[in-house]
Image (cartoon, rainbow, N blue to C red):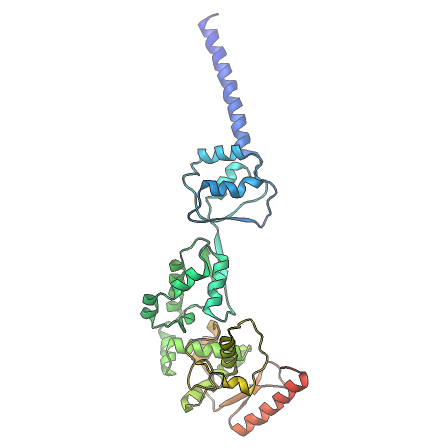
Length: 345
């Protein structure tokens, strides 16, 4: 057989061999390999996880485990595992799985209506890699508190409700820095001057705002309620805010899950720095996560002579305001009678 013919045969055989290899490789790389995968199911990879950890997570759902491992090796994934949150979809091939495992998905964080910093840290602990203790330690870092004049009781005022985006494996310090940056941006020169004119610090404004927010859900009433409390502060009166008594009772009983619908005289005797019936001035920290509208309501409080207010019976959700104690007692008597008739305890 001539050399030329031998070369042709070798080339042809080599071509078939290459085609065979490519066919096998294509099957391993591009044929559907992920099965029985919930559309809303994500993969969470921790910073100390390795390829074996990832493989263990995916193995029950892989049609061709060996094929996946081979493609992962070709893509240098085992030595470059990325931590974070990743979205995989049912029917993905091995190539797309590796691509998806390199694309960390941001977590959208929206928060409001939170009572304590511990609850906030707990929420973060369920959404991100770091647990609640890690977040609490970062929020309570002495240097951070000192730099902004915060205490463990009032540092909660630093966290302003809105929507943020973080990666699942975000460092708690990086997250805190973003909250801190937003806090500084919010407390611009104009707002600081308004706080100063009221004789309050930004932290004190936020503490008062937390009380106002718990007193009324009506945005058009917040500035009037804030005006009442500012009048009491000027007169040296106790704030006598029922929401602070509710908070004090929960703190005293160590039960923040209880629902308290009514404040009784005996509740106002609870010994607590948060009980504004027993103490003059603001409590040491917020009793709720105040939103920006409540803070601005305090900064732009309505100027009036009202010193008292009570929930309205005629206009549910609103309040009746009074200048004299006699007026207030009449309003309170009417409201108490309504509570008793409605069987609210």
